[in-house]
Length: 188
Image 1 (cartoon, rainbow, N blue to C red):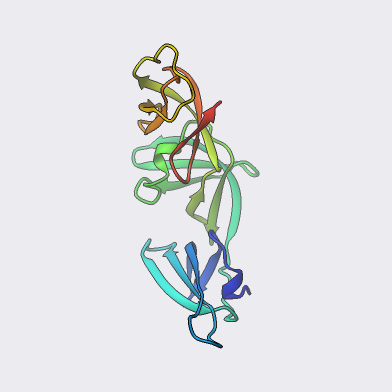
Image 2 (image 1 turned 180 degrees about the horizontal axis):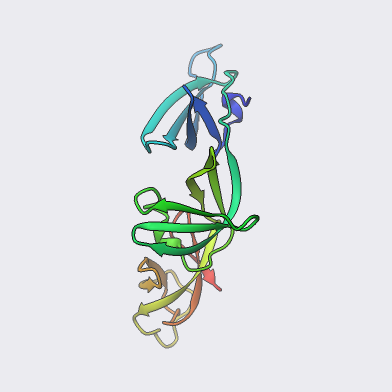
């Protein structure tokens, strides 16, 4: 059982028998003498997808939810279902497009390094790797003599995601994208 002060993003906590994942975590220092530090935590309900904001003192114990983290690979799309395959036992799990709406632009065929969260054997969410390598399918031509300056241009990637890239990057190149911020990191 973790204390509120030990929570981190991605931890799964049990509230009234329902698993909630920590999506953001913030420590609030007290202004009065002797007051305890408060930890403001935003949870997402893994069953309904609703948000829950709670504040805790640092020494409050929270119950961990009974869940399993499994490495998976993105396989294919079937209608509005995204199919993931477990890399350990090859079991297939499906998530609807609505459940992973923010992560869909980063899903490319065969993407590995994804961690699935299973509750009672059913997939409820996924964690993407820190970065993904994607191909640029459309951007304006590189400017001759362009250097690694602060100027950028929009580039459309293979999934339709549009990111800002340095002006020396060309169409057809593979680039590394940060999956949390959605920003260009480097050439691949």
